Length: 447
Image 1: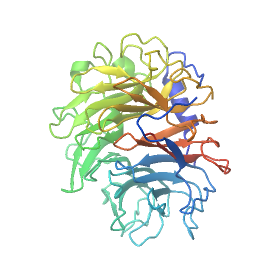
Image 2: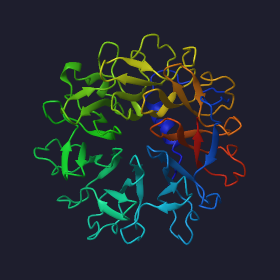
Image 3: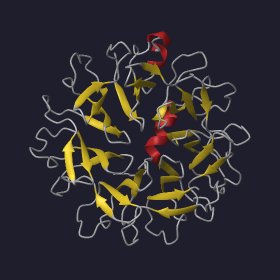
């Protein structure tokens, strides 16, 4: 398994990008605020020994205490003979624990992926095809979503009891309080009237035990195409998803020409309280646009975050490559994030994840551009943070002394304050004594 998904991500963007995607690059920046910024490695054992396998896909809890990540290492936990799977690192104690285990502690006997963590680090959700995580197992060999309660040491299946063989429940996203889990499913028996024979996005209320399909129009009409990549806002108010359906927001048109492109997906946001579904990424004229790679929502659900190669989303977009954007779902206004402090357009493509702090001030994104900060000369993909009040931009994936990474960095996660970020990197110069020759997960204290 490859934990740093650089090749797949770049290929997906290039396959969808219609313009010229330039990849050039440059170096460091100081931290805002009065505290000294520093970088440390997360994917290490409790006593600080480096992992003997590649690690990546790091995500951080909203309170900044817990990091969940995947690793192929076999030495992260003493006596743990099973390689691979998601792990959790407590940043205060240094303790590392395996996530994909049954309530009695038995490790999963299958593959595990898509791990996500609640705001206080208590709950970790993940997808797995294991057969031994809950009583009764998983006799059909389906992909299921599981919830691990780290405080009670209990593991439960999110849906379970499949009426159909070989179903796929996956791609979980959890609200900060652990109440809501958004997920993708191929099942047609989760809600009445599911007859579209397509993958849909659902939300389970874990407190009430109810399941709701959210990849529907505001009037409840089911989508006429598949929906994927669910993401729920930290406060549980909105769910975002990508879809090939043409009938979810009729006022924006069907987008038939756009959806004729095999990889094209449109970004929608569904408000759980009202049931309203709206177009989350659109052109200046309100028409549908294709989004690339990951999508996101601000913690309060107000902003839709995405990457797109379309040049008609904001005025003056002439760089002919993919950029990071944020759409205000209250006003409909869209802002381009991947620009330099002086407003200069990025000279390289941006792709992957986009995130925002809880106060909606700091926006995070990945870019191959070399002109977003001074001194960026490493020729590698970097993670950036933009202060939306001041316009200041700085690099996240640098060493404690500000040295730029000597390899690419991707797949970041941010706590609610925006002060702490984790990221995956193949760089070997971000911390001292990094000699394992593989990808690692790093933590950057920004301020």
